[in-house]
Length: 429
Image (cartoon, rainbow, N blue to C red; front, side, top):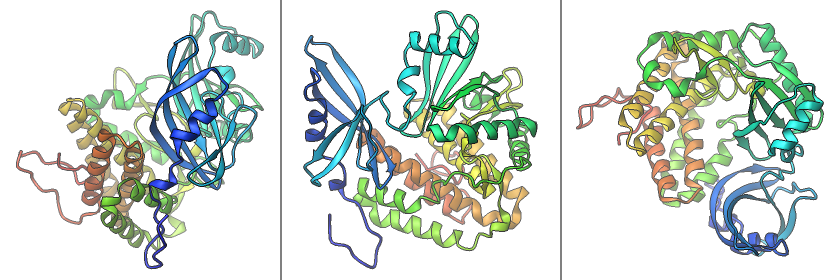
């Protein structure tokens, strides 16, 4: 670590990352499996430290090769499935574990194997025949979602920290009672398992070409957030990218030290422009809204038919939900463009602009909030991309820095040399 300059925020350096070349092979020692290579995958807060994810290429004693998602936790979380080794970079003990043996989600191993899932659902009164399992989502230490398809139908197994089962079940009941199209909880267990029904429709993101220029979808999204605000909840929404700005700033600077001055300037601008947001403007929000959480009717894709992952819901600033939607659309646009699909990339950008403009039109007295809300989310996405260390991740992070500059700019969109007017929330590519 460098000495701290008291006039600037503390910055992490590359030394913060564990010495995985030593740590991960130590964790696999004695297992009969050797580590061939490891690539950085992700990083996020964990207790008093960080949770570092790696894709680890291995070979066993029979010559069988595999890639294992492996985590190094410096925050002190471990159980009997973790290996405790010393990181030579810091001299401190760290916990190493491989998916699905997640210490925070003790029931996860049980829902990743077909026979175990079939037995589990039978004990819950929902027998299935020859199930097919698909991991729909996974956030280490926080939650996982496994889709189960069988002749009897489709259900989703949601795995969370055991103490979260009760609150999540209550949230679903409250949303259903308020007329929101969220999945019903079919069954639950105290060890962290919820069984959810399948909701109607398809993810809105999969129909981006159909909804990008349809004002009815933007109106439906606005109506959805309005209905969420009527749910009688009392808890606070989950902390978001703006609440964790200091952590995201340090992580992004560590990954892109050459851009430290620009990153600090962006975060400073977001901080200045978000000072004084009154608590009176809070309402019940989703807390992690984006188009993969929103389902639409297959025949009328402008019509919203479902809403997922309300674990994060509670009292918060409504502009942050919109900022999350817009930022996710910008990232989606970059993803499509990087794969040569300029049509879908441009559609995502147009929809991002439409959503942002609609919010400003409906909330003119809070128009100055949309830029910081979008910017904080874009920078969080940039950190997630940059910390992978891949050339594509670094390039995407740089593009998201440009997008953040655009989101915070006061000027109107500029027509670039190619003649295409892109939204303020999107970078020029």
